Length: 550
Ligand SMILES: Cc1cc2nc3c(=O)[nH]c(=O)nc-3n(C[C@H](O)[C@H](O)[C@H](O)COP(=O)(O)OP(=O)(O)OC[C@H]3O[C@@H](n4cnc5c(N)ncnc54)[C@H](O)[C@@H]3O)c2cc1C
Image (tube, rainbow, N blue to C red; front, side):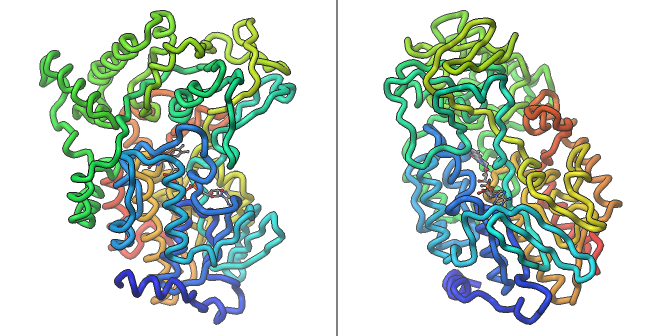
């Protein structure tokens, strides 16, 4: 189907559900980020009726909520975008190598306008429960706006990083100043001029926000529990020649990227040789080149840095030296120097992050030994000392991958709650389906590459897989599909085995849920994007092997 036909189709929603008196819609989709938006497009394209519920007032998901200063993607813009429409990808012009949040949100809005998506999205509506009715094989979805609708399929596009995490700091409720979470930033922005600001958290978000807030605030206190590695993004205006080259064969470019680790164009920067095959001087030269290039090149500089601790040390030592050379005060540099394996926590990209600690208006507060002991009405106590602040910014991340799902009362066969099934960690087949929950899909769910892939293509891959599955069922008059336990149990083992062959599972990070107190420690994403895409194709080729279809 070409784009113009698609668009015509998109303006005339199908009415198939009208034929089935038991349901209001063929599918309910929860969430209108990039996942939910494309899922809706795909369903409509196939002639299914759908209703999308979204808690926010508009589309964009991550990029709607995370409006904090400095927010931007760390996947190059020409790749962090949809590929389902050739016209769309040709006509949209990104201005920077790594797009800022406002630009990504403009893009999301453009897509919603261009494909008339909003007509099937109900905003300001949080889904509270989704309950499977075995008798008529439908889902009943209830919302905080009083909706109660039925659908054959229930598709969760609720986001891997949408349930905010704010640790339960003692005294938090006593703080009299303003408080912000980077994942729910005020639409009109925040004016930090003349203010003493405290930022809690130095993960990817803190690292993006801190240099920008430091420029505005009278004084900035950074409360750091864990030091991080970070590599300069080297953000810049889009290179017109590179854009023209990619756009000359965008389709081919995307296809090639699908066959690369993380679904990213990294091949040119990837090495197939091990660190030990190169002398120290050659290695350092290569690392320096990657550093100058910026972006994620260092992560794949050698074939074994992600799998072998000694190899990893060669790159982490290089990064530690960089911190020491950038930060003037050696004591501050020491506190900023991480002691974990490079890239086993989400690799961060920055613009002037370490440089910020040379500013006279920035103080680094080391929380390693005592943590945040107390929050008073006027400040934060660490190691017995109070740091007075007018406002607090929590860059404390998310209850990743399972948080948004567990916030909904999801009940499958026998009224069993998904969160009870997942009490010891998520269990799914392919991160798409969980046994006991028929006709229920999770987009980029735990057990799929998700956050260890370029996520917009990963979401498209899931939406296409789900759409094709629904079409397969329709043409064969099948009413239900669910993962079998025989497929799900070994998949869980495979997820861990693949992770354990790398260093991703070797430290505490949000991929394992370790950032959320009480969350079971289970490695959630599937590390091998390329292998995963092939497995998904094989499952379809084998008539949905691993799924029970009726
Ligand atoms: C700061 C930041 C930077 C990132 N940068 C990158 C990057 O560079 N590259 C990359 O690949 N990925 C990045 N990500 C990951 C990003 O989340 C994904 O790329 C992508 O935007 C996820 O889209 P989604 O539709 O799956 O989820 P989301 O964008 O999170 O959308 C989910 C939506 O579901 C809604 N929702 C959740 N629960 C309910 C409910 N019960 N009822 C109704 N609505 C609900 C939420 O309000 C939200 O709008 C980043 C994430 C963050 C937070």
